[in-house]
Image (cartoon, rainbow, N blue to C red):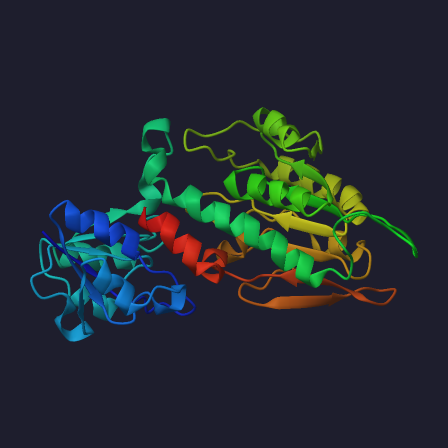
Length: 333
């Protein structure tokens, strides 16, 4: 079977679907791997590494000739989808819940498509759970972005010039990204609290050394591991409670998501207005609209406070792509 690995063309996408380590294993299993020249460069994997692993390097024009399968990270563009032959197996993040036109194009061309987002989040499928592996990278990177922006040191330091108090961080959403963010912020020395509407995750938050913030808003977990969407009344209650508590924190990282739906709005403008100057919000859910009312996907917003100073709202999207080497490695495996 011949498998093709294209260079990603989506704006800002630096990952690659197969890394040399995996190419070597697939070659030993009898697969023939074709890699587009430069496909892994943005992630730190050079063409020479693919050649050493047994891949054939080709230009884009000949990449798909005779390909039985195509593995990629992001959905193909309309032009790329049109180049796929009927019967080709396509594997990638294909956005089946939100990109109906893209799925329709693949169907029209007779492509057999497997969306990585649709792999069941069950124990037996954990090694294939690419959503979780990429969320791990996103949660880690979110804390680094916050640490870079906030004008404070994360850990408590006792120096000759006096003691520096640690940063107080709040992580909203205790899924895979949220738990990784909690663990990373703790390693950097912050005093961390975690909030989630699913009471079942309280033990996981506390096991990482964080305090569980109980706002009195609860819902159950879906079979896919996500929180069930709140009613309008619960959303209003949650926003009100967060508005009271958020000013206590220097850093807020939000990770709440609902598959196939816009991200729930958890932090209203008024809550941001109550934060201290220099505080930072990193909105991991920016790609689907953001958890903060002031988030602008793809941008960093400086919200001016009434008393002077401002709060930075980081709406950077595709966080795994910012750590493309290990994100690609995890996805490829």
